Length: 79
Image 1 (cartoon, one colour):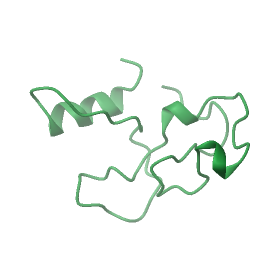
Image 2: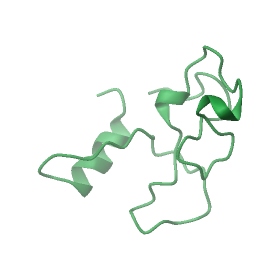
Image 3: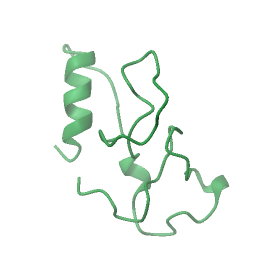
């Protein structure tokens, strides 16, 4: 699995299948959500180097609590 944190979260949350957590398990947000800390983590689909952090309108965010959080830097996450 390319996202072991997301895999473990999906397995716990939906043991019979389903779930599509793209974020890893990095603690990025002090807020807690009702759905098992889904706000925490870096969206690994947005942590790629090509035009990383280009604009907010490009579909990523620099805020750790956002669903599309891209991480601190391009390729900052080992997954």
